[in-house]
Length: 102
Image (cartoon, rainbow, N blue to C red; front, top):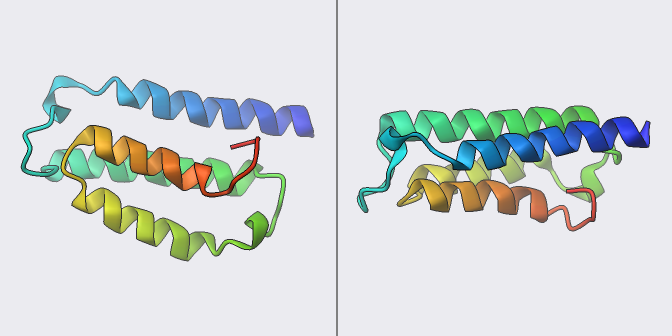
């Protein structure tokens, strides 16, 4: 069970890392994310949530209301001024769980 979680979690992390090698259409312009970029970031955040919900070892998510937590993250990602900032916000959403598994 624990090994299975680790495999799924590592796959989710790999997804975020691979996505950080953003296509050229996701280059920062200093004006915020355009519609395509926002859609790309929303998809990444959605997939991270799916993996977390299906594989995280603590069904209570350490007392964090995931729906509210990811709504706040989504709002911040939508307001991000660059793809790199959006990726950092997505990564921070997992770090907020404050454990060695995320």
